[in-house]
Amino acid sequence: MTAYTVASSARIHAPASVAYGIIADYRDGHPHILPPKYFRNLRVDAGGVGTGTRIRFEMGAMGTWRESGAVVSEPEPGRLLREQVTTAPIETTFTVEPVGAGACDVTIATQMVHRSGIGGGLERLVTTAFLRRVYRAELALLQRVAETRARQSHT
Image 1: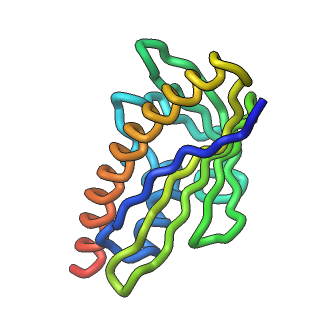
Image 2 (image 1 turned 45 degrees about the vertical axis):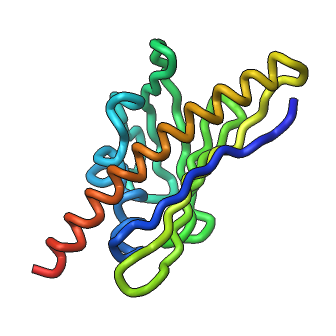
């Protein structure tokens, strides 16, 4: 088994605190940035904001929906949030870096393992392409939600 990471980043035109707040709030923030084409049935089992939150969700890929669970931690509150899948060695991080008063760069990255050999290489290729599509869609939704919330906080 070999570890690899799939990541995608985007400039979000909203303050870092707004973007991070959306990502860390699994009751009223994060659900709004999950593309329904890939995610459904996000449920909060414990907590709800940041560290200690426990979630369940379904993720769809290639016509199949699978339920997963994750535990949330904040190694760097306000900057880095981690979702650790409870049933597999898969970890997704959300990193928010301010780039001025009204913008930030957000990176979604998932680290996982693949089998060795040709099958593992193909698995990695397909998974990488799929997750990049998912993350681009998620970051686009984050942009819309963050811009709206930033405008609302100024009115």
